[in-house]
Image (cartoon, rainbow, N blue to C red; front, side, top):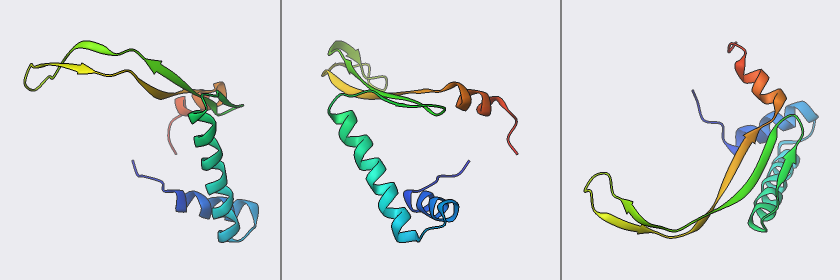
Length: 98
């Protein structure tokens, strides 16, 4: 398994869209900026064929435990992003890797 960077995504977009790397980089940056802003605002993002991103509020945990020390710790409430893959992505992931 390897890591794909934003720069690598921009290269792939540039090749598929037949545009310059700079234009593709701007498009990728704009996409991620838009996604980030919408999630911060608490909106649900649905991309058909890919999946759904949404924000979930978690409750504070007063009796959490540090697994290393066994010490009881307080974990504050927070927001986290959940991703649920869409039907097409799920099907593609069940196929053997090329």
